[in-house]
Image (cartoon, one colour):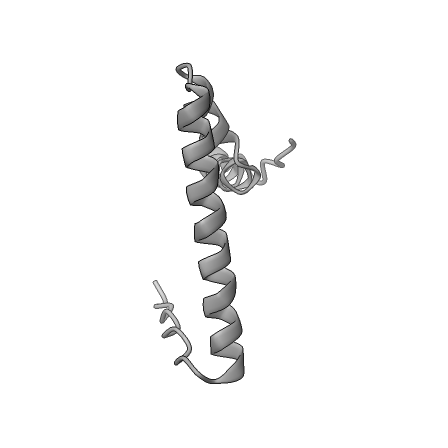
Length: 79
């Protein structure tokens, strides 16, 4: 993973790096590898993740069809 530092702005480069690592799932994997996970706990977690994904997919499908209201968009304020 590579991040360019522009104008000696290390803080911005760090923010970009953290965002990239978050998107790649590095932090989640580090937390998962911190301690041993029993096979039964792993199965339960994977099953819960699958259910969460399916519900999200179904919710997005209903929003596209107009049966559910679309989520409110976040308002970006100028600094």
